[in-house]
Amino acid sequence: MKKLIYLLVAFTGIATMQAQGINFGIKAGANFSDFTGDVDTESITNFHAGAVLELNLVPTFSVQAEGLFSSQGATYKDTAAEIAEDLNLDYISVPVMAKYYILPKKLSFMAGPQFSFLVNEAEESFESKSFDFAAAGGVELKIIAGLFAQARYTIGLTDVYDNVEAKNAVFQLSVGYFF
Image (cartoon, rainbow, N blue to C red; front, side, top):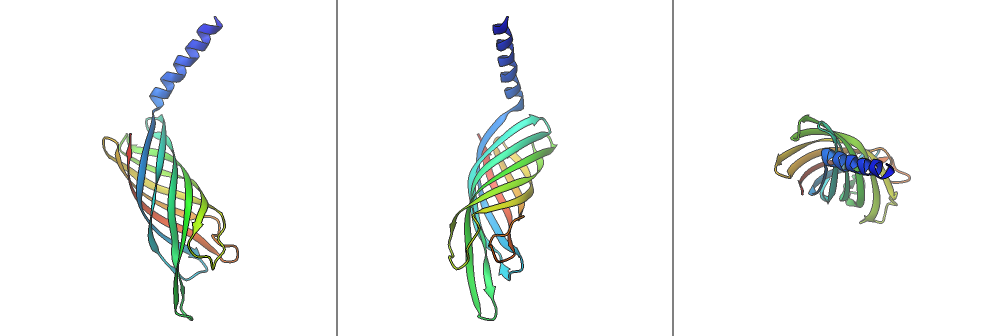
């Protein structure tokens, strides 16, 4: 009897996984980033790339986690000294997005937190923090087969530097493919 119950639970779990659907994919795109706060900066253009995992819970709602290499930062302007310096920060970013489909299997809105871990800073004159916490939101369009496009805005909730009020602000345009 116990074996029958275990077997029934196993089949139910498999059927649930099939109904929920797990999609794995890749994505890449452009970052248009700047700092917000008490700094005089201009935006720079960089890139992001990585893996995507979407867990479909119900037809109109899913959770999407990503692992991305994201290069961002800003150009620092010191008008008195007439200096312009690129502040490039490379992160491993892990956004966890709740997705709500307004057109089933086609168009969705997403929002959620992003956890970023600094792996490289190109400029050593400023001491960057090793962790960045942010809020993200955007839209995704599934085009055809597994091809999709995304637009997302991410606003930092923690300062990038210890003694300066500067937070990351990144607009991302991405294309990707679910296998």
